[in-house]
Length: 404
Image (cartoon, rainbow, N blue to C red):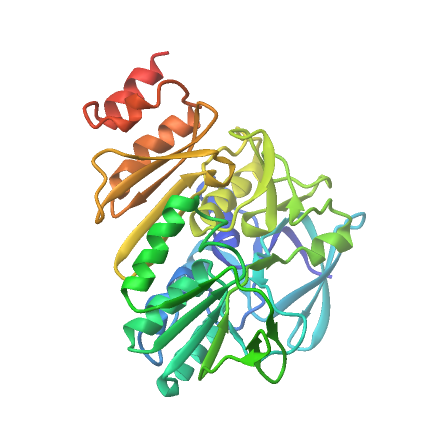
């Protein structure tokens, strides 16, 4: 039975960043990286953007093909992790139809998420993999009309890409506003206005939406569309962690080091429900930046204890040429202010909880993200007018608050 000092299950941003961090720290022993896909690991953000613009688009590799060999990292494609036996440090997986077992010393689970699906078989496409994106792009060649089920980031990015190709697009969202998980109400309104300006028909607060194998209907009336795409969230792939006995709660629960309740097993990226000191609570974060940074943090923590992970979640989306960025925890905010010479083309919003800055959002104004991130990390609180006013540069405000 082969033995590997460190095994990483999942070759997305988190898994590769963990492996890269191990090598950067001088670790020289063997690293095995298991990927459940058969192609070179690729970046996921372009799948709902650039990859929908052209038939035959190929994925953008996270690392070049020769990087893995140069780093001495064994990449095993088509390997699906099945079960972990923690007492014996054994991992069982399926590869090319063959059931295999190996022994590990340390195990990092970076298994990510999968597209949430409707329980019944439906005529909807889902977008999570390069294969999904390629199929939707081929479908768009023959489609004149597109119905998007779900007003989150994936649904709206597909809507924007479809309109860019001249398709008629309608979005159906059961909630009262768009992107409610990512943004407070004022930003949702900005996004709604943007989509409607570009010809997307929005249906919010939808009730009696029925989706089954035959059709999609609203209030008993079939919805007419050539292509249906569902973007209704993501489900963490924690099943293999359950077999080991890891604590689970909408993800694999880990501490500030990325360690599970089992001493030799760690989890990183989208699948991990991390303890975040800024909010003193566990949270699961589904962003590209978090997967990279948390994966690297866990890679280092496997070798030696690190300061607890405290990077703020940061998220961005481009829709119809408009860039939206948010940092922090907007879902915890109770008040939102528009700030700093905001206009219809460029704006910055700050999100407060009581008198504490908890998050910030920019529209075509990403330069404000870094200084506002500093203030959020430092738990800034006080007179909100000092941030709202454009008279004092944000960098100066950061420096002033740092002296306190």
